[in-house]
Every structure is written in structure tokens, then in C-alpha cells.
Figure 1 (cartoon, rainbow, N blue to C red):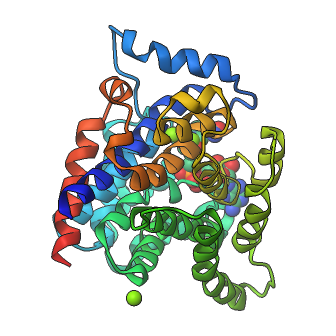
Figure 2 (cartoon, rainbow, N blue to C red; figure 1 turned 135 degrees about the vertical axis):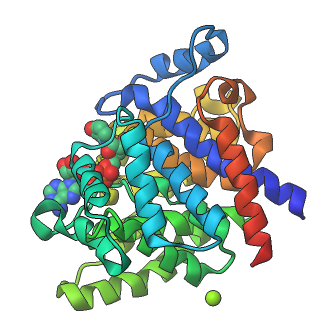
Figure 3 (cartoon, helix red, strand yellow; figure 1 turned 90 degrees about the vertical axis):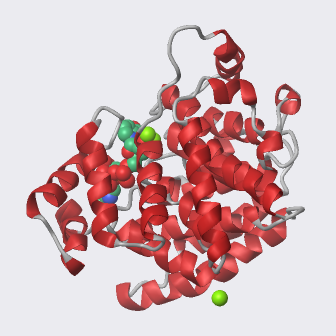
Length: 340
Ligand code: 8NA
Ligand code: MG
Ligand code: MG
Ligand code: MG
């Protein structure tokens, strides 16, 4: 059913853009008021000046999509160069300061082969980054590959171009899996959705432990907690933030995005009852505060993949920068997906 698929592919990338554009105003704000947020989105259709600008989340997602579409597979050097050139062309998109220095290295050194992963390994005194920057751009991978093993492998590789820390690239794998499962589910059951994620992440985190000599499976631990929290009534946002986080670390934001999607399968409050599934997921995740653009962008990618374009707020789409390109990239990825 290609038409229905096209809607879901488009809504995933559009959802990512909308979350980024709407969330960016509050990035780094610990407490976001629902009243202000509702006023913001209601005012969107009155905008007569400029679009809401997208940030690094969307800029990097576009590079991932573009490279996969052109080469019909992952080509490390090309993707790394696209990240770096996109940054160079338009550096004022709210990138993390740490990552700009990595882009400089990628541009200066003219790296080939496995060398292209070297600058990322040098980040943070050789520990690599555990930021959420790899997870925030990974949605196109779930749209490019039907096969779940390919998704995991390509998500890891793309992540490692900038995020060499296990929590950085495993966060990207988890986000890609969430988009994949949302895309292929006709009627999400919260518990089985989380169980599917745990089943995939278990062996991934176990093998990471073998090389890091730790018994921890931090993503699985948060996913287990999620099952408990999805069943709670009258959950406060303070509780959600305390359990899942809302920070720039992948571990403090990817589970939060997944939780937002699942929690918002039903309207979470009366205020959000008037919104479509995608819209309320975005509003809810921005309301959690912290790294709002990135969490809303990841939650939007998952929700869009599930609800499809029927759920996309057209009013918002008109006033967020980069929606058209997201739709074009989604069509390109669907064509690729269908050829596999
Ligand atoms: P990154 O790789 O620089 O990581 C982001 C941050 O995580 C770093 O600045 C560090 O504070 C911290 N960090 C990551 N790894 C380590 C480590 N091994 N040791 C110590 N600290 C570490 O960049 P990224 O691309 O992962 O970041 C993505 C975020 O940056 C997104 O939110 C994006 O929108 C942007 N951004 C966020 C904020 C914010 O305050 N929330 C502000 C501007 C930009
Ligand atoms: Mg951003
Ligand atoms: Mg397989
Ligand atoms: Mg952010």
C-alpha cells in the first residue's frame, strides 16, 4: 500500500522538523508552561513575517537522508563531509559547541576509509560523545531499510561519525528502532512496543558490556521502567523528567522521546484532547522542557511514522522551515525502501 506508506514516511520526517522548529524556542528551559506553548502553536497561523527556523537537528537529518538517497547506501566519507559542509554553510543553527570542532577536523584532514571515524573517537578526551546528536538525525535510516538488522548496523555507523561513546551510538540505534516499529505498526500496544525495543536492545547492550566490562544495560533499564510508568495514572511531568531525563545526553532524551509518543497515544490532558496524535506528542514533549527541540524532534519522527500525514497539523507545516524538503526526502527514501 504505497500511498499509505508515503503518508507515513512523509509524516515521520515532517514530524521531526515540526518538533525541532516548535521546540527550539524553549531549548535549555527547565520549566515550560503549557499555556505559553498552546499560545505559541495557536499563533502559528498568524505569522506574517518569517517561518520558524529549524536547527541542527533538522540540518543533520537532511544530510543523512540526502546521502542515503544519492548513494543508495551508507557511504561514510560522503555523509561525514555533508555534515561538515552543511555546518560550514550555515553554522548558526544551534549546534553544540563541541561538535563544531569535530566538523573542522573532518574538513581539514581530508580523511578516507576508516580514518573518517577518528575525529569522533578523539572527542571528550578520547571517550567519545554520549550526546543525543546522533539519535536526533537517525529517522531516515528507518525509512531507508526494511530490514531491522540493516537499520541497527547503519544507525550505528552513521552515529559513530560523530558519537563514538557507546551511549551515543546505542541511543541512535534505539531511536531508529522506535521509528521502525512505529512505521510498521497498525495499532500500537504500549507494552508490546516497549518489549520489542527491549528484545532488540538486550543483545546490543550485552555485547557492549563485554567490551566495556560493566554489567549495566542502561537503555534496557529505562525501557523496563517505562512499562511501569506507562501504567501510572496522574503522572506529573516532574516525575517523568526525574525518571527519563530531558537533557542533551542520549540516555536522558531518547527514552523520553519514546515515552512521550507512547504516553500521548491517548490525549494526556483535556488541553491536548483537541490536537491530532502527532501534534499532541510534540506539544507534550516540548512541555517536558530541557532539550526541547531535540526531544520533540525525535518524538515527532516516531509519532509521524505511526499516525501518518492525516495527523499532521497543516497549519504548523505552513510556518515551519524545511517541511517541503522533508517531504521530498521522505519520497526519495520510500523509493529506495521499495527497491530493497
Ligand atoms: P556533543 O557531542 O557536543 O554532545 C552534547 C553535550 O553532551 C556536550 O556539549 C557535553 O556537554 C555532553 N557530553 C557528550 N559526551 C560527553 C562526554 N563523553 N563527557 C562529558 N560530556 C559529554 O553534541 P550533540 O550533537 O550530541 O548535541 C546535540 C544537542 O546539541 C542537541 O540538543 C542540539 O539541539 C544541540 N544543542 C543543545 C543545547 C542545549 O542546551 N540543550 C544547546 C545548543 C545546542
Ligand atoms: Mg537543535
Ligand atoms: Mg533480518
Ligand atoms: Mg536540542
